Amino acid sequence: MQKEHRGVADPDQAWILGELIRYLEHPRSGALEFEDMGPSWVAVRDAVGAGTLRASDKGAADVAARFDALLRYVSLRLGRTLGTEVVPALSRKEAADPAQRSAALVATLVGEGRLTGAIRIPNAVAPLHIEIDLRSNRVTCMVEVDAPKVGRPATRVNWLVRQLKNAPESLRVEAFAAFARGGSTASLLREVREDAALLIQDPKKDIRAFRIALSTPLGMKRGRGRGGAIDSVLDAVDSFYGEVLQHLKAWTAAPPKMREVAELPDERRPALVSTALSSQDGVETVDEPSSDEVVEFGDDELLESSGS
Image 1 (cartoon, rainbow, N blue to C red):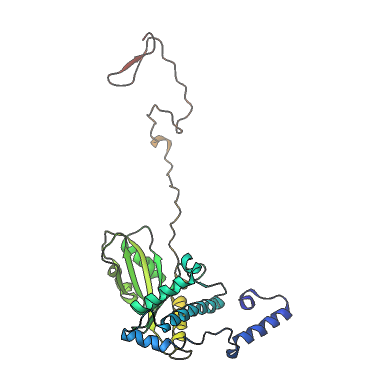
Image 2 (image 1 turned 90 degrees about the vertical axis):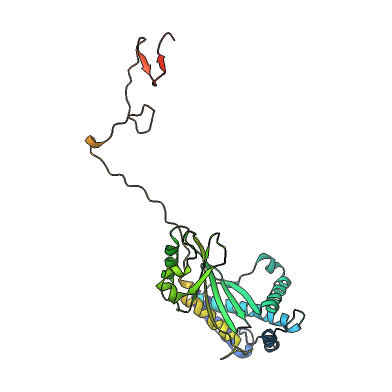
């Protein structure tokens, strides 16, 4: 990041930094690349498919730890490409207690056959979620976007579709309606482009959020290279960010505009008939009523200015 995006003013220091990067990037340095999902990867993958994996199995915790390491590597690799700091997205409890995070990963792996996590990219519309499903052998990248606060449901869907004009047609789009029962509506992007109503469950209920996901095959091998799990995750993240996430922008309300009032000719301006003081009134002189005059304030009420 320093060398490629920020620069080094001193030529000697730039050369030294380049040599250090060259050394760290060499496969034999063992300092940079994430090369292996661990010796338990194949056994755990097969046990998930057979439904025999248990939380007490030693391999389950090892694979969960390797997945967290993969998230850190994905963050470093994407951050180097973007020239910014990308980090795994963890809750405060997970950051304070890594054992809790590991236990949650193992529980999800045993119960559902999935490993899930997220990375946080500066100025992105939301964290990028990464999911590995060992039952279906798929890797899914997804992001959740808040829908606009105004407009009809179809208008909100079209707002999202316009931002996805260069996204792949196989992208899955889900819509969540406010105060709606029965979950969400979902369809592929190529279908939503033709008919926005596919994501509208009830025209009377506003859409509050969208979930956008792209699923690709998961590599079976534990190592790097073609057919490897690591490279399939890296390729999925690069594709999703480059084709989808970097083009999404959060909705912001337009600032209020001043109302333009047409100027009327003097002869068409209505006369003010109210007797109350107003900022619209000019300076006027009012004659004091005499003692014999009576001022009428209503149909039934008379107020005499003297003697009563």
